[in-house]
View 1 (tube, rainbow, N blue to C red):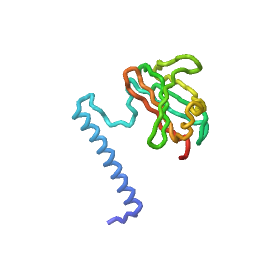
View 2 (cartoon, helix red, strand yellow):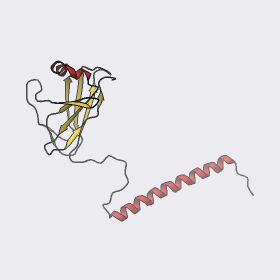
View 3 (tube, rainbow, N blue to C red):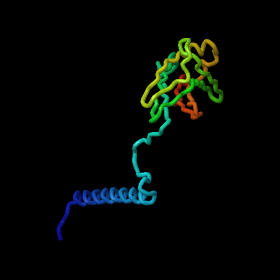
View 4 (cartoon, rainbow, N blue to C red):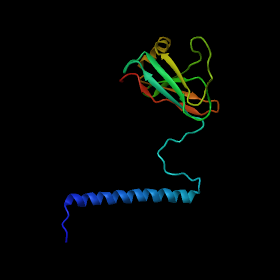
Amino acid sequence: MMDVSPFVLTLVKWSLITIVLVVGLFVLNRTRTFAKGTNGKKLSFNKKRVPYDAEIVLDKSQRYNPSIIGLTVSNTGTKEIDLSAPVIIFRRWFSKRKFKVLKVEHSEIYPILLGPGKIYELDISLDQFYEAVPELQLACRMSIEMKDQNGKRFKSQTIRLKLF
């Protein structure tokens, strides 16, 4: 009988495990396709594109106590989307205050129409909110939400304004 080194044995073992996993994934994918028909859903890791979708991203000017928030709205869908005015939501523990942006530099631009792949950017100064409602300086978190004309809501991630 032939002596084989332990390194070769572990290499053979891991290569067999890898082959079995790849074949198993292929068989699983084929059986799912067979069960659902020719246009059945296959296993894929790509993001599915939907007709009406928007992504809202917020950027802060500073890590804590920012004075300017950058709003970026991008249409990630495949069709045009008609978005209404953004609603700014300030949060502190269990309370929240909502403000709707009606005008930008003394002109009414909402609702706004974004084509596929288009981006809309807006800089929001928080000082105007703090002057109007001083208690907002205690708010810890902030987010923005927008609705399209069909009523579908798009929300941004929540950003932290203060530590506590």
